[in-house]
Length: 251
Image (tube, rainbow, N blue to C red; front, side, top):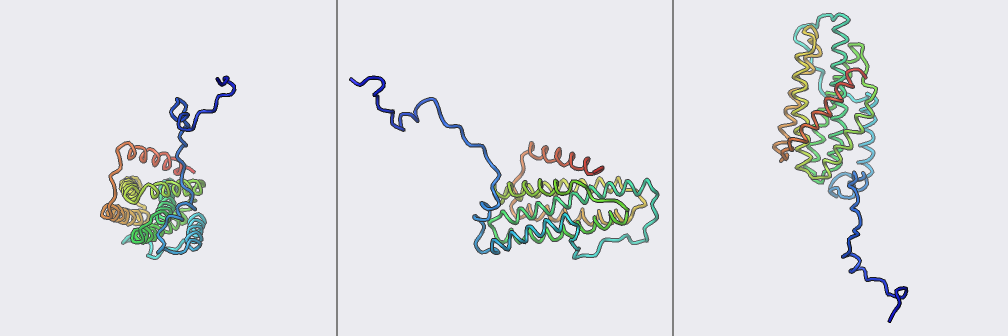
């Protein structure tokens, strides 16, 4: 008889039936490299994609994007604003500019993550329209003597990570997240039309055009097969957007 010390170790199958199981690894955000490896091979080369994505981020954060459409202007010349009105308009337009910084990151990440070449083209087209919004709000901030948010790199990085994650889940989820985001932005811009000074017709013209474009982007996402976002996720998105807007109002 073998002693206790000479017993052969249990085979792996036996050990796997015990009570001690390895802990599952926590889910991690996919790396850019992993996403690129799963891209549609008919898309642009990987190096071109990385350089284009990095260039877009630098242009967004440095304020060097140029609009492809003229900045919307009111029908009549804008009236002069007093100090309080300029301060209020500047804070509201800073929030709108932050929203466009996030939109650039979101569309860039989703275009990077999708495997569907046609969908990638739609993301890139919508992103170019959002570039107009970015340039318009930046120009209006300059006219009001206001500055962009000091936290723009943080907003951009967070939105880019969310866009990558949504795109990695699947195109339907990515489109659903995009559609819900655009609907919330549309309502947010509607509220800004109520809060902007009546005399600030220049800012109001910009916000009205942005609202129309955001509604069209949401419609595009829904027609492309957007999944309905669960109610708790929609609530969490509104909560996060509220934190961002309150912070950007001052910083």
